[in-house]
Image (cartoon, rainbow over all chains, first blue to last red; front, side, top):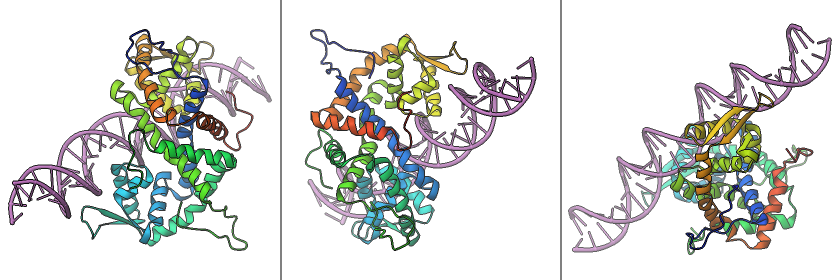
Length: 169
Length: 169
DNA sequence: TGGAATCACTTCAAGCGTGAAGTCATTGAG
DNA sequence: CTCAATGACTTCACGCTTGAAGTGATTCCA
């Protein structure tokens, strides 16, 4: 990516091998996807419902949980966000009347985030908007093999190198 | 993604088809990559050189341009950032002494961003750090077929649906 | 030639994410 | 039992991104 080609001289401190053309394509492809897709997918949600993509995913994940309630830490895990981020997001969603928070009766350290009826209605209304964007920007341009490859690649990368043995939970 | 399955009744306003399991896997895979990878790839750069991933990419792209100078708008294009974002990023990089800005002699509307010597040295020093992270978090976990698929998928998605005829520039 | 339109940025305020430090609940060792 | 350790958040200050509104430079055409 840089105009720098570190041919490691003898005894150089373990410089990693430079990227060849194919590797570079894979890498730049991934990073541009990561930079471009969220914006494209967020636009319709934001325009029609005043929601961030991440806010929608948060609401959506709560709606999928049994009883439409989920622990903050679990929510952070399934949305790929930090606990701090989720705390902020849920606070805002609560302010807007879509979510409520309460301590988990089973263990007071946990906080349960629950959907209100308004929150559920919002998810129902926003889902088709989101779905349309996902089809348009992700699914439709790809064929079946691409979609399978994407799922497989994501599965391999999601778990980072030194992070085995805690795939679930 | 949501616990809502819009079976469109007769005459319903064109609800898009819901996602089947394979489609959902592809979609959630993509979005979690987009959420997770930037953070992982930024960490070492930020720790060792006080650089954002985006700042590194910006410097790196300038270093690759002929004469180590590039127009702001071209820089925005190659980094997948907005012009506004680049204006802010480059302003900060300039303050730190790594970049200078000057009007393009050929057309005073353009601004050329150029690397200083310090900026070039920084790219040289940061490149191996970045490279190591890319290998560890992206390239190494994938095999050759995966990497090819990733490049192909990104190429298909980069250009959005109604955006043909301006692939280059 | 003049003046409107277009272009390439730049700025600013508002909102969001991050990481460190703080709070409160529960567990566990002695 | 008690009190330190751990766990699950929450808060806050700081920095970054966004989008709308601005500033000059250049082009177009009447």
